[in-house]
Length: 410
Image 1 (cartoon, one colour):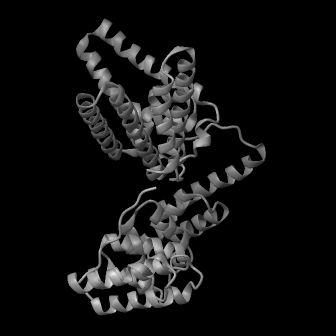
Image 2 (spheres, helix red, strand yellow):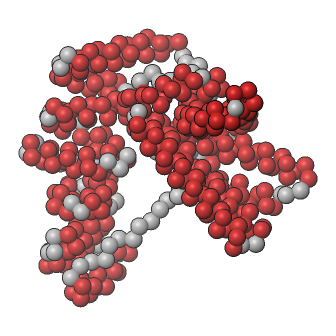
Image 3 (cartoon, helix red, strand yellow):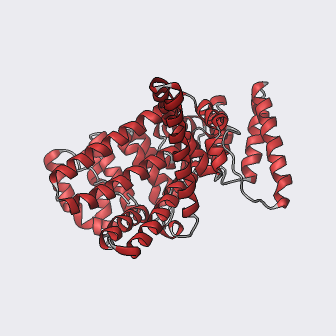
């Protein structure tokens, strides 16, 4: 529910309704189909790389969409032709079996096309089976979710078509179809990111690269081999050192960081995890892994006496996640002395409100929550939230708790 994808969907829904006749309408339709197709594949590509922010609207219209449309159309035609040929020569039973196999492999084919940009790779049965085999049973769980999403889309369309006028129904179904497809493509990209350590060489990119980077890539490949050997031999300290060095050279490599985090948790190397805690926590917050955040923080607070979350934004967002997870004591530990540690941080008032809610709603300490609210009103009188303090105090007095924050998207 972010701005750029919603704007793109709105444009692709409204413009065809305005330009619906003549050559201009056809040209507009082709441009929009290309832009939307490119955007969907960018969603997979970015999500697979660990970038969970949606692509910009500008990227959708940056060119290259027509080739993707042609490639994807060819894939559908080839798959459809294969089913037709099997039905013609081998009978309908085998054709149905072939159709089921194609539908199961279609998400993997789309993933390959998005990440490798080659139709031959997206049609190669060995590559498709390689992706399915590398991900394992979670791939079929993803397929189940995709089926549920498609059924949900069908239910929405049926509801709209049977209850709205044809012109309005066309617009609404176009919007909902695009939105559901955006969710589907995002899910496929995130699965690639989540199971990248399993995929290994099953997904690779084929882009033109600077020859000067070949030696760097060769060194990285050698490092990965050494890490795998060290792990198999039980030499965890050596693997930790190699992963740490690799991440230092590639600080934006979230796959390496995730491997390092899992290994440090497994071996209880709290000293190293303390040093890498900030990028690890940001990764876990970004990917919504609240259970692992709680495990990591509890271990660090227990084993590292002076540990604290050293970034104000990270501390605030972690505290928000902990509030919704119901871990109120850990929340208060994370934002303890927030105002003193981060004097110029932008979330001072929000942290005070969050602390008050955790105390009142989670720990049933209305007296302490009231002190936080009074402190907020006294020290931040110009802040818009300060205006709400009397109302919150009254609500706390009557209900014994504070209203939960409103959820917003975007």
